[in-house]
Image (cartoon, rainbow over all chains, first blue to last red; front, top):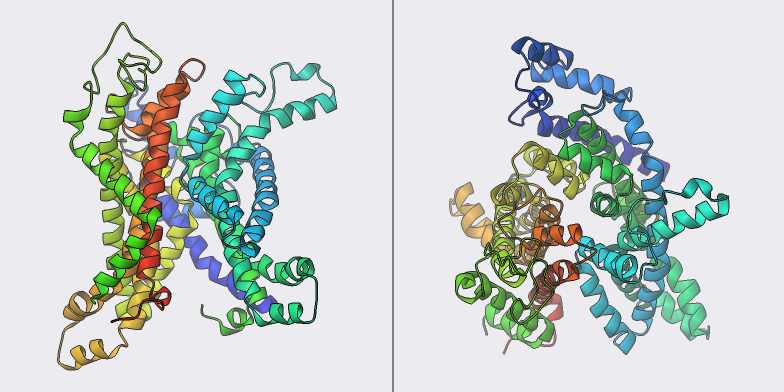
Length: 326
Length: 284
């Protein structure tokens, strides 16, 4: 197993390198250089000042040299300075990680709590009314634009009922509250974002756990378990679930890019100071160092998700970890 | 009975997929007849009815400039439709080329192309799209191109997998031994037989492209006002969230129904095209 994980890690290296090349290429092959963006505010910027800026960012060197220098700094976690406020990109990103992480962990938990029982019930009571209704809901869930859902929830709970805040992660007067009050305040701010972020995942995972469960309960050992007289609940929740669970972990790993992409949208809508919002702001202000830093981090997170999925696969199916090629 | 006949017969039995197709057809009709059926022009300003709630005069209300939301949605359906189809067309084209080359030639060509696919897939697609949008001027055409250029990887994988099995089949080997060149083998022999899974993926892809376009337009980096798109009407819905729920409600509902319909059609196609599900209907 360790050998399998090691091999997967080694395979990631060229992909990591490719990610940095794509990131660098996307930003540097664009028409107009970062210097133009920074100086476009004032028309009076002299040619000399432009040349200085160009030198500062190393833009006067050939692209390959620029890339190698950038990569050299990058592996040392030196992401450069932001174009917008001159702060270290690494710091800008680091201070936003906790919020994004908290929301993602909470929504993963929510996805699991809701989707797993729904999927299992649909599978064990296949073609029942519950199964049919949940199938329709899953389809609608797949097709709902999450930013629309966010808007509707903001209108309902924030504007009409006025019971939930619709932006930010804390109230303005939060300093007057005790620790418990502060926690409650956070909680109230996070309800809508976490729900919106989990929404698509709930649809996907309940569909997936349904089919995973259906695969398992067709197997011979389930028939054996029933034949030896085990109660149905034990057959399902002990014998079947255990084997259906790993493929489900796989899909959780593969859902990382979706969560990240969704985060960019809902963090922007709810004005949540996380990495997604930072990415959107950097894109809007063409803050290239920040864009590049976040792109690589997001890609690495996606690769880690894939790795988790691969490991889960390897645990379930020895053919995969022993066979080498998929 | 022909293969096409079987597929159609199976598709026809699927009520949801038929319903989805009907909605898709209705949408295509709406988009093509937009000038005839929309009650106002999309930029007509009704100065006395700014942010007016739904009424007989304006069934879906008006926006912050007094423009009719229903009319803007009818014209906006053109954006969704064209972005969905053209972006998917670009993605399918790139995917077919990359997938065919990788699957047909194998070896180093395959290794290089598929590693590139892996690299592209390592970026959450929305993140990659935003990065490109950051450096080009946003418009309906760049949106189409960007969604297409960042969305071809699944098609490439599907086509490659088909090529890997098909190129070993007797009819291909026969054609090869009869002296057919690579181009003929790829385009005349293998590709037509490799397209089935691509149809299904493309249908889901249209749904995905429509969702992406509306998200981008909602964020202000897609279709630019005053051109109407469902996403940018929703953006003004967010700006007027305290007062005008109709600006947020109807365009989003239109997106939901459209995307749902394409997904249902895709699901129906997948089931109808899957030979493993054909047992019940033997060839007469």
